[in-house]
Image (cartoon, rainbow, N blue to C red):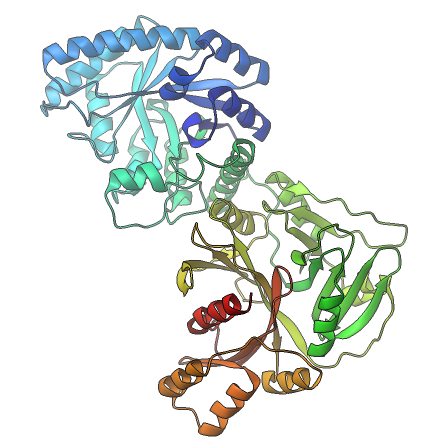
Length: 591
């Protein structure tokens, strides 16, 4: 796979961007005119830097408002083009992006546009330069890639072709199937971007809300399939205008961008039965192996787990690590870190082939995690997600493998339980990257996003899950001015009421729920007074839909996390979303 990226995707100066692109493993870059103009380095110096780092300069872009104008304006456009051709020669690139006119277009006559495109191409040909004509989605007269191709075909110049941009095509709802009518050699360049489905002005949508492949709602797998079937053999390049990416760390964003292209190429190859770009197939998640909490001192978490009825399974024989379990819900407490604040530091996933899962993660550029392992101990494959949360894979029965490394604890479990879901939260600048990581590396599918009201604004919730729901990872995005919500572990049990009663008897202090909440539950669901009293007495929350019921409660927050005990009755498959604002408000009151 031949990859490229437009420098406009990244933050920083041009030299920083080029170094980050090389470090991420890109083969080439598109040099944005504005980036070069603002750079203190000369075009020759930028060219030398790219050569030293092994990067091609695939394209210089953009040249705007060149065609569809009166003759006086066009004469000046030829002068502007000649000046930019000088710059391109100094950069050492032979391809210029020409965008359809949106600013000075006054002539919609196709004969005039064809003649002017031809004249621009002829001037470029004198310098050995090619021109890729792109239909902008908001072009004054040319806003459809099929029109751009028809004009290029009529102009009939060997150095004039088209540039296809997934955003400009898919945002307008144009059918990409007609791409296959364009000869592959006339598709001079391909730019890729994803985007969320938004009802807004297409220019603002493009300038602020593009995403990397795999993060939005566009069917880029189908789109790319049409382009490759047309015979295109050039770079797969990213052009993503996004306010977040232009503020975040340039090295991290470049790695994020490169991962998105690998994911897209793999998905496209798999969808069409091609083998050229395949990486190891994603491993289906069979369940949550364990969840890990880390801090220098976790005695409060020990106490909490004991109050909930978890069984202490022992201490690790060579590390300051402890294990608690209830049925299949296993929680590892790791005191090998210096942080005083307990945090959800990692989780394990059971798969059929841990080595294959690890190999796929490496192919997608995930950072491997090193854990000291002594002779006779199980080495679990692991990588770090973008925020540092560690993901482990295990293809063996934990009772017969890593659990045996814990000594001095009890064997019997107090009650049946499973990890129902792991709720993680991210600041605004990390959210989209985390979604792509969990889908591409961990192999989880994204459900439609929802918004939950919170005390400081709307919290966006994006659930990532395995197809059968045995692994669920709700991901929360807080408003920019609000603190990042705490993370939590949700443990599923058969009888939440019984677990709550026993936990209270052991001294657990529940998250206080206001009496107004139970008045609302009674009004919404008309429960029997005895049930309302029971819920209120134990601090339980309740939800119901057409498939079943959901009963749950929350523990106090310790550091950066808390636990939730959930009971699903019937076919209820949600997460008690109507109760989330109550929980968020209650947690704010006690912190």
